[in-house]
Amino acid sequence: MKISASEVAHVAALARLRLSNEMSAKLTGQLNDILTAMDKLAKLDTSGVPSTNHALELSGAMRPDRARDGLNHDQALANAPDSDGQSFIVPKVI
Amino acid sequence: MELHELSLTQAVDLLARGEVSSLELTKAIIKRIEDTEPQVKAYLTLTGEAALEQAKAADQAREKGQAGPLCGVPAGLKDVLCTAGMRTTCGSKILNNFVPPFDAFLVKKLKDAGMVLLGKHNMDEFAMGSSTENSGFQTSHNPWDLAAIPGGSSGGTAASVAAGSSLFSVGTDTGGSIRQPASHCGVVGLKPTYGRVSRFGLVAFASSLDQAGPITRSVADAAMVLSVIAGHDPADSTSDPHPVPDYAASLEHGVKGLKLGVPREFFVEGLDPEVETTVKAAMAELTSQGAELMEVSLPHTEYALPVYYIIAPAEASSNLARYDGVKYGLSVRSEGGGLLDMYLDTRSQGFGPEVIRRVMLGTYALSAGYYDAYYGKAGQVRTLIRRDFEAVFKKVDAIVGPVTPTPAFDIGQKVDDPLQMYLSDVFTLSTNLAGLPGMSIPAGFSKAGRPIGLQIIGPHFAEETLFAVGHAYEQATDHHLRRPPL
Image 1 (tube, chains in turn red, orange):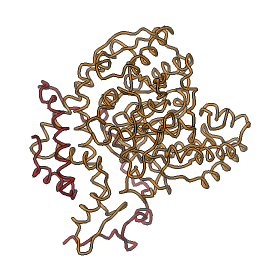
Image 2 (tube, each protein chain N blue to C red):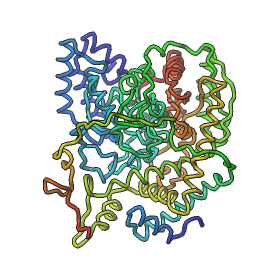
Image 3 (spheres, chains in turn blue, brown):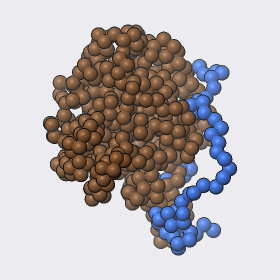
Image 4 (cartoon, helix red, strand yellow):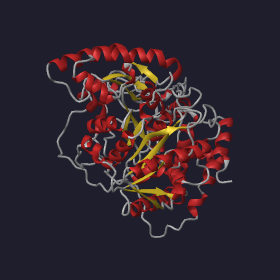
């Protein structure tokens, strides 16, 4: 068993997901199958091998520090689920 | 020949010579959409009225001598690409009513080139899938056999090009999502080198793997589309400043003297015998034209699947954190509920099961205590996979092999077995992990009439080699000229 039901609950909370009991149970089984299929990675010797996080050896993509056009107010709020025309409105935080 | 059977090259030629107007052509493709959509279900959004206006404008531009390279050609685009003012869903209910306020960089380039936009194609939700069965809205059907999947995640796009309801298109490929559906639908699909095409406005799934590319009827068509969409974009810091060569010029280079590597790890148990026969026959054709085939080894091929299914979901879990009900998209706010409830309910109701599965997998792989064992380890093995290719490309100019282990499977066949579904990508995943260009071209059909593709993989920025090999093969065969019985 690679991942327990309580770990699934913990990960769901991190991922901001609310899972039904049925979905949690199904997911636990499926995740276990997938994670088991990854066991073969652990057996590979990778000592001294650097990690590849970028496909290309690109770095330092810079531009002059000058303001450019962005979205205007109306464009930015156009898809807002709730707005007062000035800001995005969300449920109470505090 | 019907107008909807034209290749892009033929359409551009007829338009240039004034033998057909964009308005006529667009009307014909809109009719083709009406005729085929009930069975193929390739489109999520159709914008026929606006398209007709664009077609008229294109005809006027041509009269004034201002026709761009794609002037007046009607096409749809995969719904993962932001199109200003036009609904963009990424195949997800969480973006059901999202209307982007901007065009993706490549969309702007296509519009500047004069394309007529017909609408947006169905896809697996957030590009996660191999069949379109993960779409939040509908499953698309393979025009060659309506009981078969069209492939995915660019399944709607490939199906539309095959059916003639789009005269060319652009899909995206993170683990094979251009090449696999192209192979299943009997069309050409190119995933360019990572960084060749800007990802600005390409809704992110896995940022170190995603790449947009052409899905077309022929290799020459793919070269034409890539010429339009490739190029540096200052708004994408992973966009490569490598100059864009004249891709059209590379088509006629031929394969004489080219060394083509055949990876022994691609020809193992599990490869469908018809796929093997078809791919080997394609290689024989290339040999007869003067290419030299040699066996090569990509020893870490079997690790591509676990590496990909850690890295891609990890990156996705980060990229999909933005879907929270605050600024756009679905927002579920219950009576008396707080901010956290909005996040939990919006995401749980808006995401489909495959997206939830991958977000969970990715979050787990990145979480404290597991990061090194999973994400860290996967990154190291990714380096080994990259090194395999570097070693092989010292000996050969390109790699050839199958695209998928089997021809298209039936709709519904693998939908309950995620791991089985993932296995359909075994030959395409490592290309994305190494950032290399890869292309699928039509190479034949199974006895049941389902298309089979040949994959060509090249070193970084060697799209010209892919075009040369693909075009040479195409000129001697007619698979790409067949049209589905629709």
